[in-house]
Image (cartoon, rainbow, N blue to C red):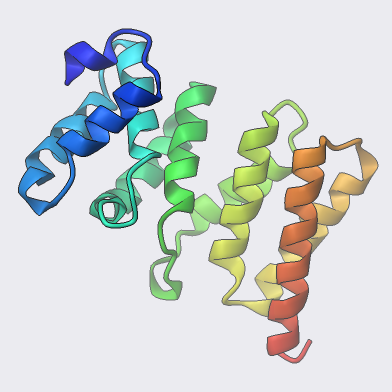
Length: 179
């Protein structure tokens, strides 16, 4: 698998890797692929993360066991591409009320308003912040305030769309809380 991942790859290569790792009988291959996300060769680690973003609904839950490890990695990661890919993987995972992490919530809120962050990271952080904060009206108010701070800058169409979507979700959620 490493041999495939060390070169420039395309969607055909990604599909081959996804097929190689499909099903419970190939969980050992999923683990092998996951270990390659730590590879010292950036191309290998980027490509391994990219492959995980294309796992189908039947195979994606395998990654749920890596939830906290992925969060730890996102918090420590300096490389923007790896961070973006890991945030994308986390967006495909459930966030349960009883296992929320305040350090990750704080990270997401902080990244939303940092202009030097890529649009993708800011957008993913908006969505991830909502997924974690939706259980608590006071946290949703904090998220709304962070999103309101974005009024002071010109946003890309994608970031503006993400903001609008999250604001609608906040409004609906707060309505359920009677606020």
